[in-house]
Image (spheres, rainbow over the protein chains, first blue to last red):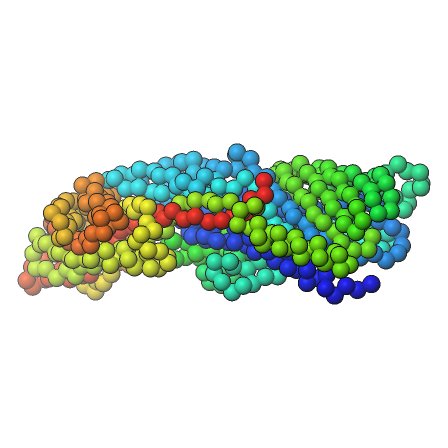
Length: 309
Length: 204
């Protein structure tokens, strides 16, 4: 069954949320980054890099049930939020090479306090470390499509692309693809819970630097197993679920340093284990979920799904 | 499915109306931009002792830094001197002139200075050609620059500065038959802090 109006509605909601995320993430970041190079730049931006990886690998599923056969199609709107800790607010920054004497200072990261921090040098000179955006969490939203099933396998896709042509808002694009496979189909029907496993790959680009290239680009990959158990049936039920996964993400940023030189910053590949606990529920045509994940950076995800289940 | 579309559009409308206060928070951020002001001198001397002044409209220089970063004078919270450097920009002679001396700074719009900004000792001119050499600044001269920046921000002043090269000696000594000729420039790096308010989504 096709519903041509639904994709536009999904896009409209996603547009609003992703516009905020784009504004949050790209606005003024390059100005602040231009003061830093090398280890200072990585230290300043590290919490945001981790948050992007954490949110991308969140909210990938809400049930371990995948029918062996049959057609279904679901359009989900998911919000993923990474939660920052106190340690994320500051980093050990070093004054630049042309400033004397060299000093190490506890300076705000990109999500740290908004107030700048100063170091006093010889001859009354001063070096100012820029403030952060004072955030407790970083959130992105993504439309997600699930369809299946073939031999107990479902496909998941995430896609969004936005370019408003304004330097203040920048641009944002997200593309993801994954597969999940039912393990329960190989088990006895009396097995007490549903089991499934799968993987998901994503690429994410945010903002434009002064050269017109991507300010931030990231890749994420996750694979793991999930379990769930449904209470109730038909048009009203609750389904607690859990999952363990191994998540990997990498992030690069390209910006212009205050000297005018272009800086390519590579945060490398980061790997973390993740434990997710959540609950999904359905009431009439609305299917929602909320979950909490424990990993190197904790996160919360929630969302709504519409479609044929 | 029409109901589903209606729910989504209602959610979109709610978010649009609510965006100003429900899920977004105002954040005040110290944005820091860096700029550089430079002054150039042309040296052409037949004696080891000389002075070479150069006048610079400092407010025009700062205005240019602000314009390059889409900022206005009224946006500035604070401006400071971060560091300085010098470099020889032109030199075609064969003689390895070694110079020592100081650069002083004074204000022309108010009475301030001259005070030593930086000193250089045993500097080879050919060795400094095209090379940026960090300079150790003197607090008396930096104070004059910082006060000029403060007056520019808070009093609407229009500071005009004179940077003077005061030679302390040249080896070998230039003579009328062997003049010392070169061009050089000194640059001062400034940091400007601007306080900006932004509305950011923060769900938790």
